[in-house]
Image (cartoon, rainbow, N blue to C red; front, side, top):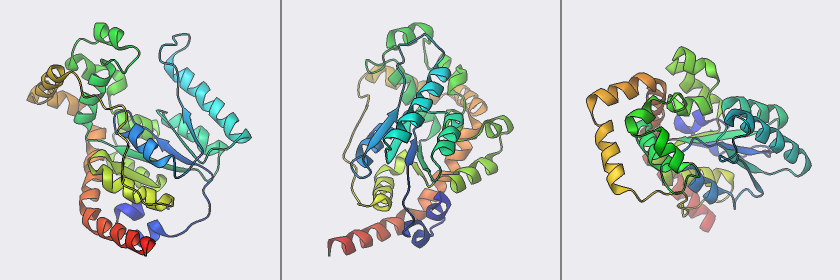
Length: 275
């Protein structure tokens, strides 16, 4: 089962029954509707386990704490296996999980990169984030947020080996996603993606969860959107996150091509299941 089958319109191959999967792992890029997706899918493939860290803990650097959390997950998985897990992990953590749990199926979702950047900026300054006040002091505006090393090609850094971000190899990165991941969705086709993935996991459902939705700070949101519409800042974003932008364009284009026939196929499958 490969995302390439789905994104190429080979629905028979993608929906075909396969051997049991020991673990479905969702590589959760921040601000791509991943929390909602997790909540929608967890009842279908329980039990679920999360890889997470305490962001207020400054005893060690964040990457080290995520490495330790990944090792804790691997240990727990050997004792009491989960069928579904997720985390804001980097690809080195993904490789560790694949090594520890052979047969793991990876899936993820993308989001238009500039919209994702704005959403992340607003979230980190909101009451939902434990370090919001510190973020506001350290990063005064969206221009400064764009310059953060951690925000450059953010999706690629979570989903791909580092060689792709270093080389800027768009074709290779897209091929890797399509062949290594079982599913690569986009937030802009969230409902269709949930229907397809839940069907593949065993029970088609419509999305119902709305988790970690930041509906406040309307004035700050408007200011950030106005800034990223400025041609100079847009060029800077493209300079720093060009790989993310190019990857998203390729995957989003594939979703546009399959959207209508996939919806029809899902309607047909839902009708057969209800008969």
